[in-house]
Every structure is written in C-alpha cells, then in structure tokens.
Image (cartoon, rainbow, N blue to C red; front, side, top):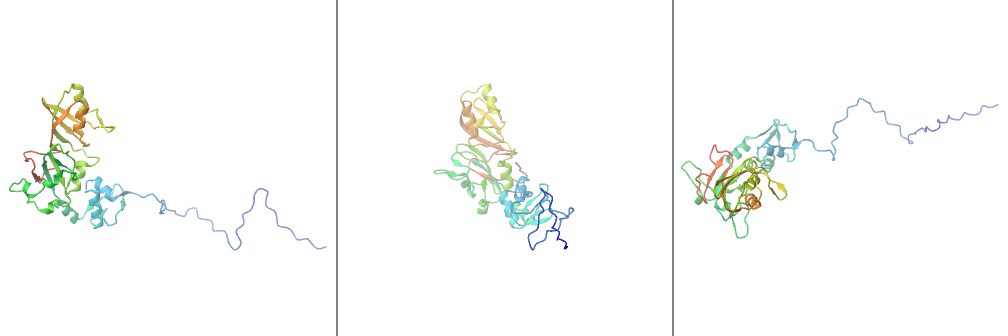
Length: 288
C-alpha cells in the first residue's frame, strides 16, 4: 500500500510565523555593539552651541552687528580656527579672538561727549525738532592742543548710547564703538548715571524713601536708586537704568514737578567744564 505524503507541521496556536515577501530575504541581524551617533544630524536636529556673534557681544568684544561683519570678513578665530560663515555656533567656553584688522578697526572707532542743550532730541529726529547729532561738527568742537581734529568721517556710524529727553540737558554719549554702546545701554549694563534735578512741591520722608526704592513704571518695578537732597529745591539722582522720562515720572508719583534736569556723569566720565552745546572726543584713559 502506498505511503501517504506528510503534511507540514502547523504552527502552535496563537504564535503565527512571519514570512518574508516573495523574492526577499530577511535583513541580517544588527550587531549589538555597532557604534551609533549620539546626535542625528537631520534637518530637525536641535542646534548645538551658541551663535558666535552672540558670544562675542556677551563678552564685550563688539556688538552683534560688528560681530557679523568681522565673521563675514574672516576676522574671527574660535579655538584657533578661522570662522567666516554667519550663524556658526560654538561651545559657551570656546576661546574667541579677533584678527589684527578687526582690532585696528576698533581702535579707530570714535566716541564723543556732548553737552546737550534743551530742545534737541537725543535719538532720531522728530517733526519740528533737531537731533543732537547735528551739533557734532567742527564749529562746536571743544578743543585743546592735544585733541584730534574733526573730519566728516567722525560721523560715520555715530549713534547715541542712551537717551536724554528733549527737556533735559547734560552729558550725552555718541559712539561708533559697539562695545561702549553695549556697556552703557545693554540689558546687563551696570553703569550708573548721575543727575541734578530741580523740583517744586513737597516731599516727605516716605516719598524720598520711595524714590530710592519701591516705585514702578509701566507695571514694572524700578531698580533701586540713590536719591538725596542737595539743597532746598534740588535732588541728586543716581540710576542704573534709563526708562523713558524716568526721573520726571518718578517725581510725579511722589507729588513733585521737575523744573530742571541735568546729567553730569556716566560711569567714571563726568561732564566737567564742557560748555553747553559743545562736544569733545573721549580722551585716552577715560573709561565708563
């Protein structure tokens, strides 16, 4: 009697066997010890490090705008390697140095001190008013035998580093140097400014204490200030911030009206005997 062919064994119930598609074989098992990258370099990968321009500005090497210019010109080195591509990132601890050409350009940048009169706006021109930068010209330069001579190139890129409102007078700094601008008006600036403020009205001890600390403007608390009387109608303010019309608004909150305001110092630089409406270059050795 002929033997009947055997049927293939059935898989155990509940455990189906996966079969590869026709014409294909299963891929080889991946080695468990194969090296894999820690970060996948894909379009959606999170950027690593901090933009070099930001690092340079934070360290006071220059402004971000200047940093971009230096990088584009190949004047920046990170850990000894030249960088010339905008947007390049580096570790927060990276060593950043500038080429001699960048250093020479920084040394050539000028900073001027102006004794701004009332009636001039410190920033951009407003209808009917004149910007203070219009006073930076040869006729208004306060000169001594050892000071540089004004040339039109002094105006290239010159901009105010801070505000002084139209009704106020005193020391206004204008600079081509992004490092100085950042030091005076950057988010983390700690340079103090001194003002002589003539007022009218009554101020008690509680009001004076509030001027020193405890007031808010635009729903934001003010940083501590130093305020004390100089004489019967004049206060001395020392601030480390510069909100719009800050001193006038502070005085209004405690019942005073400002009748005169003059800035006499920024950091270690004083207005001194600079005549009203005139300007001079920042002297060698002067630092804010």
